[in-house]
Amino acid sequence: MASPDPGMSPLGSIDEARADVGPAVHLVGVIGSPIAHSLSPLLHNAAFAALGLEATWHSRAFEVAPGHAATALAAMRRSAISGLSVTMPHKADVAARVDECTAVARTLGAVNCIVNHDGHLVGTNTDGQGFVASLARGADFTPAGKRCLVIGAGGAARAVILALAEAGASEVAVLNRTPERAVAAAALAGAAGSVVPAWPAGSPEHKDQVEMVGSTDLIVNATPLGMAGAFHGGPADWLVAPELLHPGQVAADLVYAPRPTRWLVEAAAAGAQPVDGLGMLVHQAAAQLELWTGLPAAVEAMWQAAETLDPSGP
Image 1 (cartoon, rainbow, N blue to C red):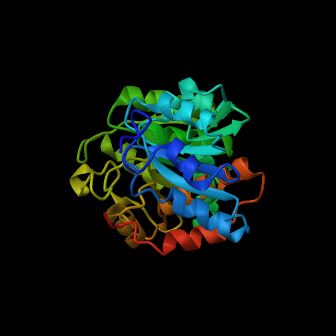
Image 2 (cartoon, one colour):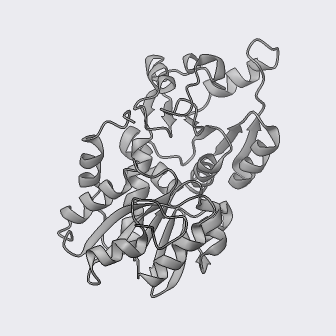
């Protein structure tokens, strides 16, 4: 049977999900493309069960084709969806279409969470908040007063850069193959932002990059390099060779499939404290649940649910 909403996949439309669970259930979910293997509903529903809300709150994944974010938002209003998590490729589109954006969502130009206040849709972004929380849990690391290096200048990198600066990092340096994007991303950190040129290994200028890496407290891979099923980059593609890291540093990778990535394994072998991308996923979802329910999220239950699965799978 055809889905009633253009852009919705055979996973089912938002309207169909509402009809399925009934009017009394608070329905939330995640929209994106592709979305079939998203862990978000698993995390959400594990938290609802731990909070004793499984009878009144439920989460599902909705495949929404690129360019159809407006369709999903209309269905969200029509079917009284309490909240939606937003992933690629809809974050920027949703930011332009919700009724209101929080300051962080406006600054990033990206929304990863929508809260429905009686039809008034408010967009925010919990990615950076989730990353900082993952550092605290995974490495007992707080950014205040620390020197940080972020590899990449895309959407995830920008969220991390802004969050590190807001958490009080003394420096947030950005290393990216495209200098213009690095400059724009570093500007999010204000006075703490700086740019590290991507000099090729072996060049006379590369020693400056090596020195920067060696004096940094936190190094973050905020690129998709190494992601299972998409980017199989190896040492020749790394902008920061993990053997440059050393004990006393924290190495974080936003990629969580495979878990850990090859870059993170080698950074740990060099002595750095590794933090993989699963923590950011869990903690950004926990922040969203708190916005939707008004209750403290059951973070431990969410962690247990995430770790029962092998994120290296298809």
